[in-house]
Image 1 (cartoon, rainbow, N blue to C red):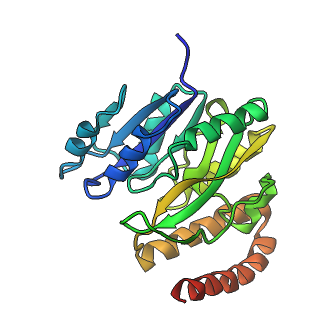
Image 2: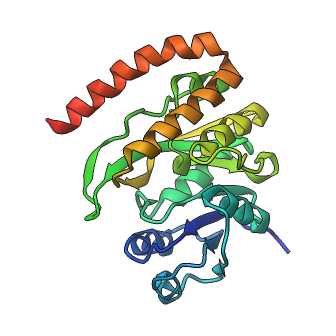
Length: 250
């Protein structure tokens, strides 16, 4: 049996209020050589009802308690059979009905690249664009690009499954950053779609979690790129972030 081109993995927990646009964007794709895997953490709301009502053909749905987001993502990776894998969080969605086709075309142009990626828009609950992402994905992505932070949104970062590692669950908030870096370490070629692939739902994240995430990311960046160079860059990152926040308020 032939394998699908791509495995789309969505992780949910009590996501009934946000997951519907995610599911609808998958169903609208003009490119259909995909499999959809949903890993639910034993939701206590009607998330599974919303998922089942979407009636995505061939969807594989699993619901059981887990130890958190990255454990569930690893379970999804274990189920995936596609040539490529991507993660589409509840609330996030494909930017257009042709997004999967754009990923497929970019992969074909570069003869099976290890990573395919694109841009991301920030949207509100009405799916209206609020802003460009804090960091714009570079046209030429390399391993060194991640010295500047999470330059590609995880949802717009598609990896060849055979080079994709499991997520390091010792990180609770930034294992996706570590995962992207590891994928780039093993990618012989990288392909840029040149398009916006993902609409990322802007949701408030607690100050405490943001702080913990940044601390973890600093540790990861120090591991791959050196402590002192990373520390020096973070002074610039603070200025960059403040400038971005001011722009959002205008």
